[in-house]
Length: 499
Image (tube, rainbow, N blue to C red; front, side, top):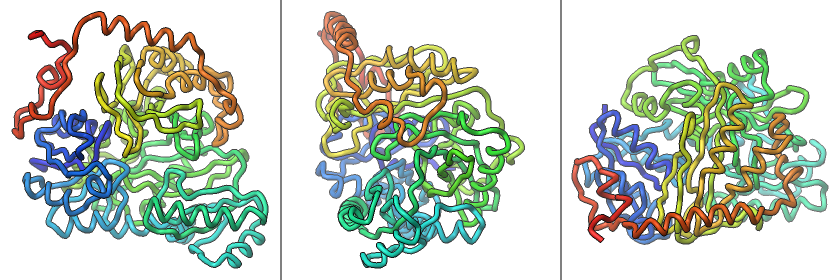
């Protein structure tokens, strides 16, 4: 097993990876930009290396600086987390060429699956059902128009590379196609460095269901059951749960088998996710493979009892999977709500700024993965995710009730967050009934507005917090470059007894 790893990421996912590394006796190295000098992932790591300017291209996207940091600190492996360089095959290749271990799939597999048209071809050859559409990217508008006419409107213009809803537009008729194609090309080029696009047939209000997979170097592939990810805004997931309310045992078995077949067809190694769209008739179609750890992985961990990051490290170190498909069981129901610094009242626009006060939810069955603290400045340069609130319970009704209770306990002041919005979604009759789909937010919450009483309740908590006395804000010059485990009381000590 590795003695030291570098986490090429920031925020809550970097903190989460470091926690498992510490349990395994693995030293951790954080990298950070100028904007993140006192970020929680920096305070959590055993060592930290500054990458320089806050611009992502100069820091978290700079391969040379990250690899130099790994070599400088003696790290043997690099875990990319999610986002930034996590699904960049060039980065995975560079890491390997420099004599380091990339905690993820091989660069060649990542390249094949990162190109959605190539991935669709691989799946079609392996008889994994795919959404009707093109299997090659196309820059010529006349050919795009001909393909759209052949499959019939509405269609979806999609970036061939990347994800997260970027470079994606639904087109209802031929008049909208040219503008949508130009916008998607421009957005994809800006986000992923490649403007390639293609067309798929639009599926009306499907469910988004994905299967977590693990695969080792020796041909062993398993799935860890499904996650329902249908509640989305701008094609970005905000609530996930497992099991899916839409799957029965037969459909679950068939989709799981398709996910394993997809991984085998691609030669997959390490943790990944095979994503499907499920229509109202029960037919399912391959969407894509996410070649990394997913934001929503905690709900799988809570229901299976498995630590996915631990298995990522073990697989990357050359160890075989310690179990077969028949050994994997699942218990209870888990739900995750993503909490961003964004304003749900204004189209979920980012809301960077200083967190004046935060209170974490607690209690039975509650897990809160986050990367913030009172006094932390949320940078404007990066994805605004602050954390993930996850609950587990014996069944879905109790899990919903537990999430409602946990959301009411979760307080973040100083920046806008969707906590109250998420509370209203989980409390809604449609969600409680499990009647979710990818246009759930547009259909049920398009006119949503916050309740002023909820803000008053949060402000009372802030006033009580301030009345308790002065707080201690961590300074970077207190962070030693040593192997000694970080003490949260030393770094983030809640009370400054010297004052």
